[in-house]
Length: 314
Length: 318
Image (cartoon, rainbow over all chains, first blue to last red; front, side, top):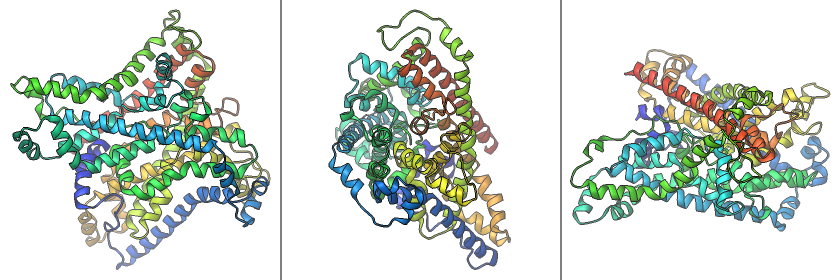
């Protein structure tokens, strides 16, 4: 386990996630794993120093977000003057939020982001899990070739493919539709390997008995493998959702209709169109980020484990 | 997480023990089932990954244009020749490397320190995850709005901070060619440190506690414990973090596009920005494809370097 975690992010997911899920211990709850030095002199000093340094950095890290929140709650006229006035003016107002939420732009962006993210999650997770099952459980002709092609695909960063993907979507007349954002994000190779390795860790006994009872591969997959794989399905679903929601480069080039823009593309236009309404700009940034903050608060463990387990990085 | 892209690092799965069994009586049915289970994924994989790669390589040898249909005339190696002799290309490569040099050391060192400290301190874990990790899952566009605002010339928070330090007329960070990339780097460190933070935290938790206990019994100070237990045992995590970091840096696009659009002048133009400008502004698909292929080759070299480093590490441990 120790070895697999550090060796490769994809290997972690099988044993690591399965074990953590079973024991209820997760990366998100490491509190009990601290060496207790508090009794000894140098250990104690060291712990205090650690604590202070960590707090200082954490506060430093919170400042930009807090600054954006404070600005969004200040009037446009004050925030246009500068940092000093924003800091001194404590007449908090929700004016910027009212302006944004009563307009229609933001709602269009939210809708686009939700539709594209949710549909991408449904397809990517379903198809990814099916492919993972095939690679984990079925011994079929051509399996080696499939493996090679998939491992090759891991080396290809999707951003680099933006131009040919755009061309292809243009040819099949899907530019300026939600599908232009959804379809290219479905083949998430890493998800396939994460699923495969999780399935590899499930004992074969369960399926053997089901197969003796006459269940086919599809039924075994649906009613035995998937229910046992809830943690990894949840983690992959959330990670895919976050990734799709945040994707900028793909929707930026394949969507030009303002009504179809996703949150990141919409936010990219804000600086130009809101001009000096600085509080409104900061409020739009907060509102664009808000769904993800909520998601994090609900699914902290899955998000942290999913990220650490799949080595998912933009 | 700039895009939905899943970047991993491939000590990935190898075909497992079943492979030799192909050919038995049950395999006929299994082959069909196997391909049926793979089919939906495979369709999208072929259409949106394999085919674009092939098409990109093909068009890189043609004068393909955005405004005409078809491949256009055959160009041979002209697109590559153009890119490799163009100052803009080398400039973009240099800015990409510059970004990598600015961001990698702080992202690796700070995340290690944060994880080490957070793993020692037993209270308020949620608070540190909130502070360090949450920015990582927010959209780059939201981050860019926040930091562009902080870097606002003469009235922004950063300006105020510099004035406090005694600089009467600080230069605008994003508006000065020599500073713009530093501004982007600061934003990126703040935004993405959470990723390395959780990888290190996961690595730290896999170090057996007994090692520290034994070291403490032998009278090792906390600093000695870190130096002779933690750092060596985390060397694989460090290799992983480092190379993921470098590969991610080579693909930088969002922050530059959103914060400076490559400017002032072309002082922050990066490779992926050059690719998209060539394709979507100049309408030159062929030339953009050649630039993409070159970028892809650079990323491939780094990824393969990681494989080699890892296999050396494996051999040493074996």
